[in-house]
Image (cartoon, rainbow, N blue to C red):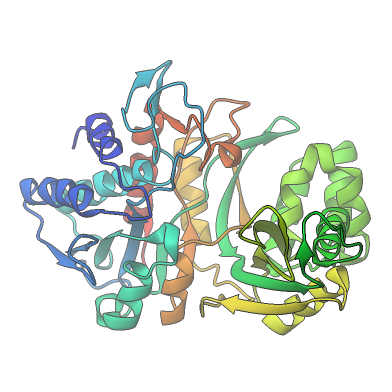
Length: 434
C-alpha cells in the first residue's frame, strides 16, 4: 500500500495548471510509484511535456477489461483568495488543501492505490484492469483522452465500462445520505454571438447600438430559462431520491419526475433543490465580451462568447433554436462543437456493482444515478462505445459543498477520504465480473 497522503501532497506541489499543463513531472511521480511496485507502464504523448501514462494488470478472462481513468492537470487559481497556498499541499483541520485535491489528483491517488492493491492480490481481477493517467482534461483533451481515443484506440479494445470523475460524493437530503453515481453528462457546446450596430466616437453617444443590443441579450439570458427536458438519467435520479424521502421533499421530487410539472417545481424549490436545475435544461453562461480596442471608440461589432452545456441525446440545432428564442433575431449565432457525443440511454450494467461497493463501506449510503451538468474525459471514451461512470468515492463532512469547492478557492479533501475511496474502488474491482 502506498502512502496516499504524502503522494497527494507531492502531486499538489507540482503545478500542472492548464494552460499550459506541463503534466510530465506529475506523470513521472506516478510512473515511479508503479515501477517501485513492479508494475510496467507506458507513456503515450502527443507532446513529451504532456504525456499520458497507461498501465495494465492482466485479468483472468472472466470479464471485459475495466478502465480506471483520471487526469492530473488542474484549472488556474488566478484571482482566488486561498486560506492556504494552492500548491503547498498543507494539512490543516483534517483536510489536505490545494488545487487538484478534488479535481482530480486526489481521486487519481485513490485509483492508483486500488490498482496497486489489485496487482498485489494473488487472485487476478475478473478482467484486465487498465489505469490511464491523463493530461489536458481541463482543455478539451487535445493532448489527453481525445488524442488517445483518436490515435490509440487499440489500448482500450474490449473495454465496456470506464470509471472516472465525477460522482459518489455524498449529500444529505431530509436526513438521507445520497451518493450520486454519474451515468451521463452534458455536452459542451460553445456559442459566439455577433452583434452589430453603427460605430462612432465615444464623445457622441449612439442610442440603440451594438452595446445596447448586448445589454438586452445579457438581460434576456439572465431572466429567461430554456425548456425542461427530462432525460433518462435525471428521471432515474429523482425517482431514486423520491423513494427515500417523505413530505414536501417527496412531493417536489415526484413533480420533477414529470416533464409537465418539472419547470414550475424547479422554481418553487430553488433554495432546496437548485443544484438539480442544470440536469433538466440546456444552459448557456456568458463568459467573454469583445468590442472596441479603445475606450473612446463605440464598437460596430461585439462578440459575446457563451459556455453552453447540452443535455445528452439532443441535437446542436435544437439547442441553437432554444438560444435563438431567448436572444432574438438581431444577432448572428455560431455554434462551436468539440465533436464528442454521449448516448441518450446509458448502459447501467455496472451500476449495481458500484452501488453495492459504496454500501459495503458506508451502510447508510443510498446510491442514485446522476447526470453531471459539466463534461469530463468520459465523453471521449464514449466514442469507442465505452459507458463512462463518474465514480470517485469520497467521504465528506455534512455541510461540505463538493460542487462549489471544485475549481474554487480553498479546494480541499478530507485526509480520511483517500482511504475510503481506495477501499471502495478495490471493492468494485473485486466484485466486477461479466
